[in-house]
Amino acid sequence: MGNPIFSSAHFKLIFPPPSASLLPLKDSTFRRTSPLKTSCTFSAPNYTKSKPHQTPHSRPSRLHKNKSKTTISNPKETTPAPQNLQSPPPTDVDLISLCNEGKIQEAIDCISRGAEANYYVFETLIGSCFGSKSLELGKNVHEVMLKSPFSRNVELNVKLVEMYVKCGNMKSARKVFDRLRERSLGLWHLMINGYAENGEGHNGLILFEKMRKLGVLRPNGEIFLAVLSACASEGAVKEGFLYFEMMESEYGILPGIQHYLGVIDVLGQAGHLVEALEFIEDMPIEPTIEVWKVIGNFARIHGDIELEDHAEELLKELDSSKSIADKIPTPLRKRNYEFNMLEGKNKVSELRSSNPYKEGANEKFKGLNGQMRDAGYVPDTRYVLHDIDEEAKEQALMYHSERLAIAYGLISTPARTTLRIIKNLRICGDCHNAIKIMSNIVGRELIVRDNKRFHHFRDGKCSCGDYW
Image 1 (tube, rainbow, N blue to C red):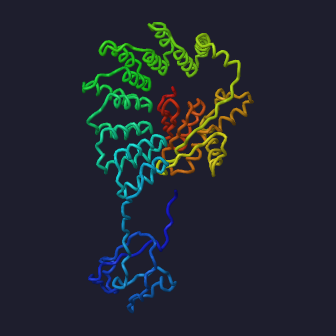
Image 2: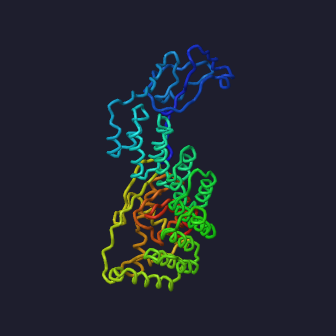
Image 3: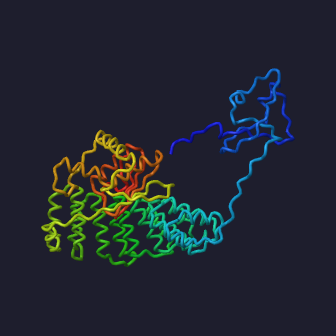
């Protein structure tokens, strides 16, 4: 961005109306009482030069001596600059077509200028922001909707809440949520689950208790799944078991396999693997493949190699196709990541690991990589599946596309700007560790949305607590 460069052509003196009287220049009070005011403005057409008033004590103006185009003119002889009149509202614009063509900002501008927008236009606009994952565009839609007759429409406000949640902005989502007088059970679930996905489980549990206190709606099984997810995000083991038992004892909801998985998730994220195995043994239903996948994942995270191998063996027994897949190598799936470069530019750039670095991103990342090494970063080559030597594995890790996205974002945005990255696969452990260190080095919040949750990296830490 940079600071703008100003020249003399950017400044002018605004004179008083013709009726105002000016004191003689020789009067020493002129400098204190002069009604002249200085203001910043855009470059304007050249004004007619006039000979400055001189007294025996005054010296010729240096501006006239150098023949500068900026002069001090008599206000009576100055033609007032034309005022900028707002263009009339467009009457023949098809707002729905603009939305379908992806011209969201153009549609917003037309509405701001007075184009009539109905319910379906705002519904389409908000839905378009879901697809682009552009938070800034969503905020602009929200702003024009507040000035429209649909500002209090319940359905549209619910869609706004969903849009903010999916963009990872729980603060704005909560503001809209709190203003709604009618809140469905699905809306409460959306907010509680949104808090869990963004690493704000504590707020999710507080919101659930508020729902229970109001007593207007009765929680269902989906709500309790979101509550268990919030407990896992917060590492609240005691609360997790409390709400799990509350399901049946207070609300008569029989837990399903997903609720048992929710409790396992709570125990696993807190590192209680032994308790998780005991809980699985006491389950009234047979453990599924997904149960052992979760256990194997937590065993790997916590470094329990024996439990990881045991979970792998059980998986092969339950799913024979897995053992066949282990013997037959399959081609790696193509990775396709999207990166929302900057809030405010309304742009989503797609970056892949195979793409070359744009502009100066390569130099930026090389310097950042050196700083990461100095800060204690050690590449974890376990996440490289190719059969290559260690040096090549470290090089492969360095060029993962989320790092490419961050490097490009750092050179494309002002300092302290939040960067938002979207990817369609789960973030690997090495990149997770690297981005934590990056966030501390660059002093920014780096938000990564993978196929499971949001990761808010701030000051060397992640909102997921390193369990995802």
